[in-house]
Image 1 (cartoon, rainbow, N blue to C red):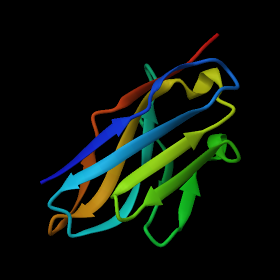
Image 2: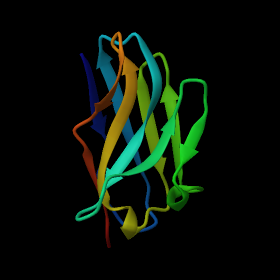
Image 3: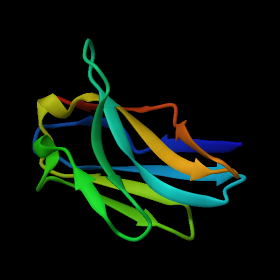
Length: 118
């Protein structure tokens, strides 16, 4: 079993910054990729960014230049640094990992809420 636990959400004014963290724990044999999705109220869940342990990254267009994903491999932790936040970034952010335990499965965190408002 693998558990993903997020932290770092909160309320921030437009233009502000937040850093989300997600720690993977449990019986982890290998990590193929980790990343972040978000779901705004009344909308479908969408991919924000993901990264593999070798350093390959991907971002959805709306966050390019503002968000940065990073991984601490020994700590099985993925971060999302979010700068210049906009009201449209308001959503519940979910950590996702494609992790071997020992077979590969998708795992999800419980979500952390980000609200961008003045």
